[in-house]
Image: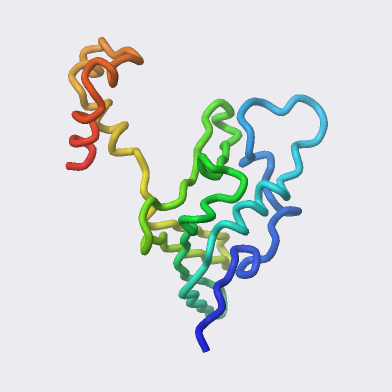
Length: 167
C-alpha cells in the first residue's frame, strides 16, 4: 500500500491560532488600529496547495526533528493565489514575497524542522529564487558607478542579467 500524501497541517498541526501575525502576514503595509487580519484562509491555501512526502521523523531526549519533501502541484498551483502564495515580513512592510509552484514536475524542496530545549530550527533547501538576478544587477558597472535607474533592464536587456545569474 503506497504512503498517503500529507499536508503541512497534518504534519505540524494547524498553526492559525499560534501564527505570529506581528511578524509575518499576507498583505503589505502597516496595520492601523484593531486586531491583525485573520490568517486562517491564507494559511489554509498554503496547506491545501503543498504536498508533503517522504517524511522521516527523528527524536532524542532533547529534540524532535522531521525531514520531508515539499511539492506544489503543477495543476493546482497555490489555490486562490495564481501569482504565488504571498507573504510579508512585518519588518519590511512594503515588500511582498511570493512562493511559486515549480514550473516543471519532479521538483521539490527539502524541509528540515527541529524543535528542542534550545528552540526551533527550520531550513528549506532547493527553493528556486531570483536572488542571482539581483546579484547580477548589483555587480553591473552601471550600478557600481552610481548610474543605475529603474530602466536598466529595459536599456541593457534582461537576457544579459539572466545569463549572468545562471553562471
